[in-house]
Image 1 (cartoon, rainbow, N blue to C red):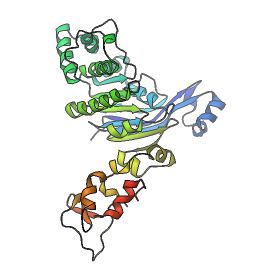
Image 2: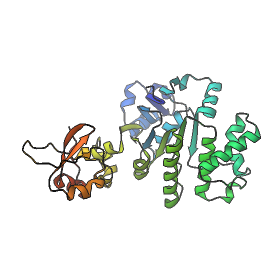
Image 3: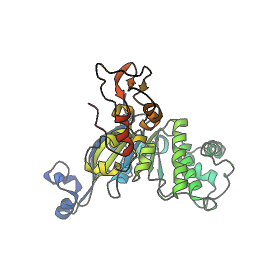
Image 4: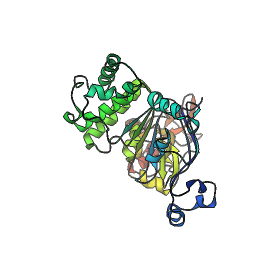
Amino acid sequence: MTPTIAVQDLWKVFGPRPERIVGSPLADLSRAELRERTGCLAAVRDVSFDVRAGEVFVVMGLSGSGKSTLVRCLTRLIEPTSGQIRINGEAVLEMSPKRLRDLRRHQVAMVFQHFGLLPHRQVVDNVGYGLEIQGVGKAERHKRAAEVLALVGLTGHEHQYPDQLSGGMQQRVGLARALAADPAVLLFDEPFSALDPLIRRDMQAEVRRLHAEVGKTLVFITHDLAEALSLGDRIAVMRDGGLVQVGTPEDLVGAPADDYVADFVREVPRADVLTLKWIARPASDDEEIESDPLPAGMVIRDAISRVLGAARPIPVVDGAEKIGVVDAKQLLPALIGHRPQVPA
């Protein structure tokens, strides 16, 4: 199946004559060395990844890692220096200005950290602004705006102005505006980082709910690991413009690619993320085991009472295949924070 977004060998270099960097020995220099020798900054360095249809793909990293530049390159809000970007199979870097405008208006919508609402327009007109640009009539705009405002829980606020709303409600308006044009892809650039923690948690739950209801493909940028683990089907970790690791939350927590990723996930309660497949061990030939198995995809914490209450090891199955057994000896290291062995 063709991925919704396919990125290959993507570079974005800021500075004088950036095209000379890619493919030359200069590309192998560290960020600091490159800046010192050339005056250039490689914000995105040789990045490749795919995003599947209907997936929540999270890009995370510390400030300055290149994640916001990366997401802006996807629709050429920032022009890449080199590489390939395809959205629904179409080469974005080969698009004419008119086709690029169509892409931004109809297929891909972006939700920013700073809401970007028009202060002199009511909520209903803020939500319908993208449709207005498309030439959609006022009655139809307002009808669609009412539909998406109901979807994000803002029915009854259509005729208020942005400054009459809380920060969380303003961000819901921004989300409704992105949804109004019914795009296939939503790009989120740290949309909740300016919100209070409780409101932020509510908005994360809102995104999960909306994704379950409308099934869009989401690319979500964040510097917050908890947010990434909460939202992401897969997570890409960036450092100094490059990708360090791409994988599921389980992959990152259970098998970090290097010390950088390991430091990120060090405080994560592994029993809340890892599943039984990470701790199952082979059964001995003469070992007595329970008859009722547990699924390999069950989160470890959900299996605690069953495993600790069993007199014998419990088989762990992946469909019809038995992949091993689990008992208290496998369970306890995950509960107290030791990293389990990666299954072969």
